[in-house]
Amino acid sequence: MYDFKTHIDRALTGSIKTDMAPESVKDSGLVPLSVADMELPVAPEIREAVKEAADRAIFGYTYADEAYTEAVRRWMSTRHNWDTSGFQLITTNGVVPALRFAVEAFCEKGEGVVIQPPVYMMFANAIQASERRIVENPLLFDGERYTMDYEDLDRKTAPSDVKLLLLCSPHNPVGRVWTRDELTRLGEICKKNGVIVVADEIHNDLLLDGAQHTVFASIPGMDEFSITCTATSKTFNLAGLSCSNIFIKNEAVAESFKKVADRAGGGLVPYFARAATIAAYTRCAAWVDELNAHIQHNFELLYAFVERELPAIRVIRAEGTYLAWLDMRALGLDDKALEEHVISHGLALDEGYLFGTGGSGFERWNLALPSELLLLALEHLKSAVNEKLK
Ligand SMILES: Cc1ncc(COP(=O)(O)O)c(C=O)c1O
Image 1 (cartoon, rainbow, N blue to C red):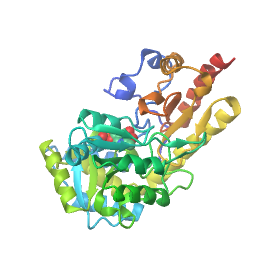
Image 2: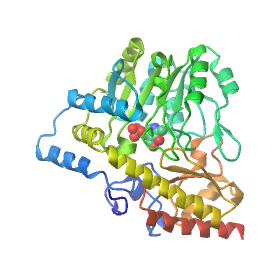
Image 3: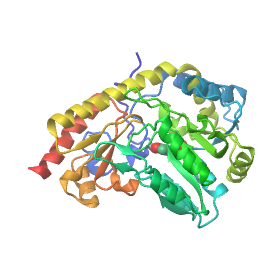
Image 4: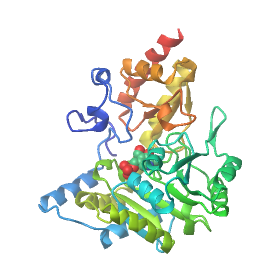
């Protein structure tokens, strides 16, 4: 049994989530439920490996050597039933940089990149920062569940200057683990319209409710025109080690991607990330199973609490990630007012509007924390909601 109960105080460690939280949150006794890293200790096997690496006392330049690539490829094979032998493995210092590289490699300035909002805000940012054009294919929401709008996708990807789609799979923040059928349908439309799919699968191991993750590139016919972005950062709480693994099969696509990545100093694996990744992917499968059970438990606490205490609020049932998506529109507050209201109750959440179209009036909660701290935060949610609805 691993430890998912201990809370580690991150104050004054330079933690973005903790040290940059609003003052009312710092004073509330709650931990922030924002930024997607975990308030849970890293697996002991990984800590051991990093300590051993520190004890070797030289922290030189390191690359994706055989021990590293074997560990990564084996994980994809055993955990995701995906044979990566025909794929190039390219390391980058994060998935977000990889999204930027793909946008710059396959799109000229002014050309279109499709995203499916509400979606992780750095998708839009990667496109805008590169002066490419955002093309929105908003998700459909029936009040309970999100799905893709294929007719709209076909229309949006048809113009010849739309070159790329950034797919979030599993989807942050709505928690969908897209089914094989859904992904196949999306892939067929993109293929027909000559659009490359960049599948951001950073949340691929974080699965709930018995959901199965399908690697987009593993679907027959989809491997040649896709890029698969993976990392240990979300699954094992290693975001601060800045390392991710990008898989590309098509040689021309891989060369174009590498050209941009190399210009930005790509190809290295940070010294401690190498040690941590090998340990994570070779020794920590059981830890991930227990983590998923813990996250599921936290979701159950959230569902039960909201159903019992706050029937006006709706929690979207998550199939993956450790991010909960709450529909708070019943409070009748605009974006700024909702943000100020939850902060005044000590809650640092990620505001729905940050995720673009369809996000307004929602809040994203990070459930990767000890259950006791979640229960405490839920009491604050209750007083925040009741104050507005009484
Ligand atoms: C979908 C998605 N992609 C990428 C990232 C961040 O990736 P990285 O830290 O590797 O740049 C996140 C972090 O929350 C995410 O949710």
